[in-house]
Image (cartoon, rainbow, N blue to C red; front, top):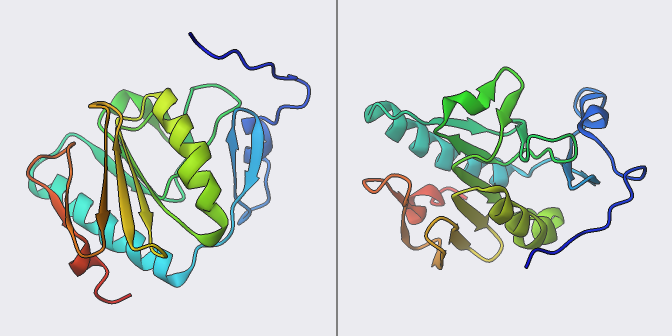
Amino acid sequence: MEAVLDYNMEEMRTVDEIKALPQGQRAELIDGVWYDMAAPSRNHQRLLVGISNRIQNHITEHGGKCEMDPAPFAVFLNKDKYNYVEPDISVICDKDKLDDEGCHGAPDWIIEIVSPSSHKMDYMIKMLKYGTAGVGLYWIVDPEKKLIRVLDYKNEETADYTFEDVVPVTLYPELVMDFKEITANL
């Protein structure tokens, strides 16, 4: 049985409001609710670069059909005017979802790096939204807990890893992420 949410359409924010933000100001929109985004920390960015470089190198070396896009990158999650997110890393394998604006629909793999201000957003709001929107694989990388939570929505599996572990990537069976190596300079 599906839950029916009663939205007051007049109070819902839209993607047009996101697009009208002044340069440098960022926000996300989930089911018409506005969420401001704080600037990322230096360690957040170092993790982002380390992870995204490994994904991009793998795609390039293996002639992959997928595209990896780091934040800021627009994802119009439900292809509607009430859902807009900027995941830290998005991997999209269906090129028909991509245009100059960003991704229209659910990416195959999303990675969010948790910041103190994004904890509830990443572990609750986005976890639920990504699962219902059709994202296949969602990783929550938490530097404070030194934890990687892997939610494989496609196979209905969840696993937790530490920053000492090598994490398999179900989207690319031959790719693993050595978090001990990725986090060596944090």
